[in-house]
Image (cartoon, rainbow, N blue to C red; front, side, top):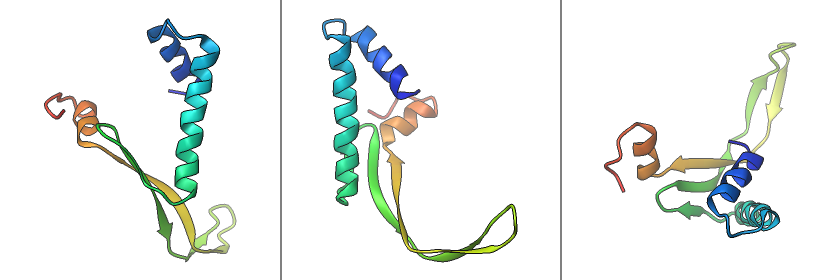
Length: 97
């Protein structure tokens, strides 16, 4: 699902809201999540999952096109861990709530 598909889906289910407001709300939620991660904060959405920043150690990688070695320094990456309820839904059982 893309951001525009999410906005369209929310507009259908929340008919009392103006379409522009739905888009603004979705964009603000995403912005707030990005700001939290940028500041190193953990985001937890019960029943859905959690986002956190993890640090990857430096390593030597290879350019697949040329085979040349490339030094990758320390870097931070966003990590998502699905919650129990989301895992249950994805795997087809609705027992975890």
